Image (tube, rainbow, N blue to C red):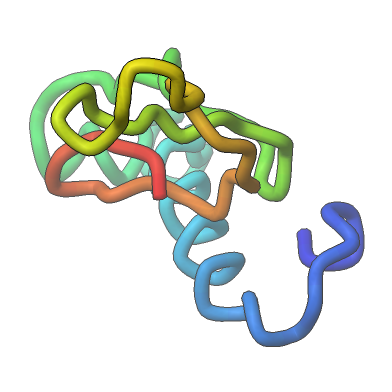
Length: 89
């Protein structure tokens, strides 16, 4: 993932966490083609929020933190999500 995204080794932890997050949402033949997420939470995982690790993204700046003519967002890279709040970092 780091190589594909052309990222430095310092992002290994984010890559590992994202890989685990994705793996837990993939079906496995050993558990009747269910996902580990389904086994734990008894519901199918949503994947509509998933993005390619290292892809370009835009981070919205809240209204309270910007002036009238300031840009509404800044460019960044997707390095995984905050699993507790389903937000991007």
